[in-house]
Each structure stands twice: as C-alpha cells, then as structure tokens.
Length: 215
Image (cartoon, rainbow, N blue to C red):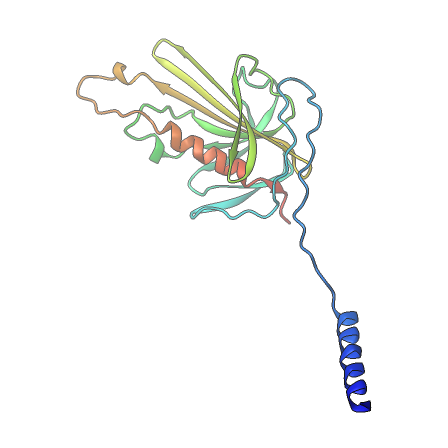
C-alpha cells in the first residue's frame, strides 16, 4: 500500500516538474493590417506583405536608396537611379529606371525607350483616366492601373502596380511600353508583337519582392 502510494506520488511530481520546465510556443500568424482611409481615390489600400521573399533564378537584389526599399529584378535589366518618370504619368518625380534588355526588343515592335520605373508616392497622378483593379498574386494584394494611348502608328501602354504596407509605404512599379504598329513595318521584315504579358509578370515579381531596405 505504501509502495503504491509513493509510486503514484513520484509520477505526479514528475509531471509537475516537467510541465514547469516546458515553454509552450504557439506560432500565431500575423494579423491582417487594417486598411487605412484613402488619401485620394487613387491611393492604393494598405496591405500586409511578408518581409522575406525568394527571388526567381537570375534575379538580384536592388537597394533603392531613394525609395528606401529593396526589391529584386532580372540581372540583365539595367538599373539607373534618379531618372524622370515619363511625362504625363507623374510630374517632377524621379525614379529608379530599369531598362528592358534586347531579349524583349529584338525582332519585336517594342521600342528602346520602354522601361520599368520604381518610385515611392501614395497618390497616383496622371492616371485619372486609368482602369484600376485589385490583383492578388501569391497571396499578396496590389492595385493595378492601366492606360493605352496611340498616335501616328505609335502605341503607349502603361501598367502601374502599386503596393502599400506598413513596412515599406507606397511603392509604385510602372511598366512603360512604347511600341510601333506591326503593320507599319516594311514588307518582308519579320516583326512580332512584343511580350506584354511577360513584361507585366516581371513587374509584378518585382513588386512582390519589395521589402524594407536590406543592410
């Protein structure tokens, strides 16, 4: 009887001691950041974007000292800081310009002035007539604005991808594409339509990688 009593006492005491020494760690996912009221009708909503992002193959990180953020870009794109955003999109705003490489231009109707511009601004000036929509990619939300204009055989397409979160603020990725009408090229000259979807996907990948500036 005494042996049984002492055995049960020892077992209970062991559980108490083990329980006292354990730290229970419950990993609770971060709560969604509540949306802030719009500054203007063209201000993107506040969303939560994770800080840790994995870049695609053949991409590198860019530390943008002007926007104070880091993001990835294809390493064959040429980065040029403090460049003027195309006239009509943003007035007196400079950005980091990423020139689109020849692999997207050679044999197509895409012009050499096409580029992706990255800048920080919470109001979308010059896009009053743009079509807008909320896009979700890989669990991340963006506001997309698109415009198309044309004159004398030239076509100007813009896709502005805007993200706003409490870590990086409002960062815009503007894909600016100047192209020529394929039918206007000389007979016998083989020219194909440029890869609009591929370039748009790259702009979204860049926007999806944005994070606070890397040390």
